[in-house]
Length: 191
Image (cartoon, rainbow, N blue to C red; front, top):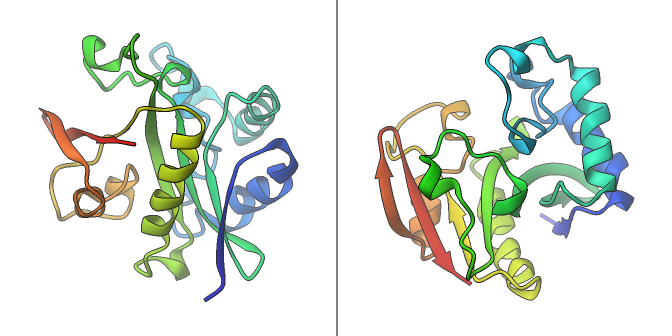
């Protein structure tokens, strides 16, 4: 398996959109309109549900051009097979977190993982773990002190329920529990 992982740049837009248009949600078309734009801002009640895939694709393209969308694409033999939305916490709207936890730390740059997506035929092959480890190095080089993740704390569940990443992957990578919140935990790793 010849896997390479690249930090998202506008030059990778075509690969990013190919992944979202044709690969990422072949087994979950209900989520195919997201384009990882959901966490770009706070949405008024019901507003997100009125947006179309075309709306989100266009907005995501602008967000990417403005370098507001950040993350990592995994390529297998040149084809995109995985994505991790790992962004500056200040660039994300994390409305499912209590306000005091969602606020960025003013003293330490913190990156947050909003989601992981691996193509259905390439799941359970360690691709998400490889993306995570590549993210450590790049985010550290980019000046981040911490990386946070927000997985469901239950080990069982569907792929869709674990789109924030599986907790076992994070613990194996050295994350520690910062907060336990209802259905999910706030985990943190020092970079």
